[in-house]
Length: 545
Image (cartoon, helix red, strand yellow):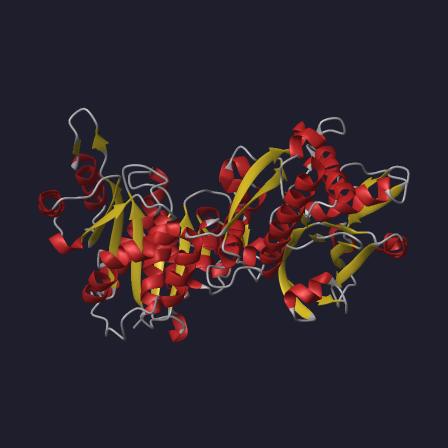
């Protein structure tokens, strides 16, 4: 029988349920168990696809086209296995399914209620990934904090799951906070006690307490927490603030979290966890030989989570190059023709980030122009590629009124225009070109040299595309279309000839970068910035002499 682990949070949000879930999953996977993670979010949106990044952070996209919570990015990066539609469920999707069933008459005229209809649908979704023996262990992270009104149906569903499947097949890991009061110089356990009581009120007794803390937990405190929260002392796990999220699996291993879980679920322990590759990665991450500074030009830079996968991809690619990558956000609205040189000087490479809408678009164009004219390594993603195309059309091809119809409908030269299949679409949610699509790389291209494979698969999230009417003019002027979708002839990658490293992709490579397999485009770009830094230093020295 599939075993189920539920991860809940208490006291405050942002304690790191996603990181704890991913770390536990990594340890169990390293022991040989087929493990997956899913996230249940209590908001009414069907998915985060229509939410502003300032509201929710990055919208992560899976192979099968699901627009999901950014925690799924951590699940994939830690486990190295893809997630799917089934790995992220929202209250909106639960209610939408139940209402659709009611409209079809599936409930045979009964009154539809939170219990049992909503909770039954939640339980059905919780069990999906465990069906057909596809996974031995399913970890379910419950969004929000215990005590939130919107979380109550999920907690009731968990209570019923434990009652139906038994304590040997379902356990609850509760992540809580042990705050440190500087005045008394002590850790306080009362918030954790209250958080556990909130769980107990809805009929759930946590099996394991993972205590977030900035200071080590003494044995006396462990005993106190165990006594008042009704758990074993060995089930009180210290989650001390780490230098990096990638330290957490090893810290949880040191605390025996995986062993406690194995014992409570009565699992046959397959082997000691194999974490050799993870430790090698940490060694490279913490002992860099080189350092570069890269500018991230975007419009949501006030919130790091808006570009979470890009930041993380630079960390992973930096480790692969034994290089510390310092990513500095640059607001595209602050860039213009007169100040771009001053704003972007000192960077060894520039990435123009994805986004939607006209705000900050002109600033991104100036960033692209600066990189193209000054031979600075440039990487564009999604709107970043479209920006690069518009900049080239305006400043190299000298095409009047060149732009994107996303920003202005009636253009003389619509370099970027709405995809054909998007014209009849009215609803915004879940209707973009989403998920994994094929891309054929041209012989002799930089992209082919990076990927080492002529046919690749990458994830997308866009409505607008490069207008193929301009492809010939672009290539004649030196902007090569080197990645093409074989099914609809969509331009996926453009590269600039006679430039050290200038590449832009319509897809999102950051979604497929994992700890043990960093994305090759990010690895190559970071390497190019390292070369640029060395050459730039030599040039500056020669000028001084």
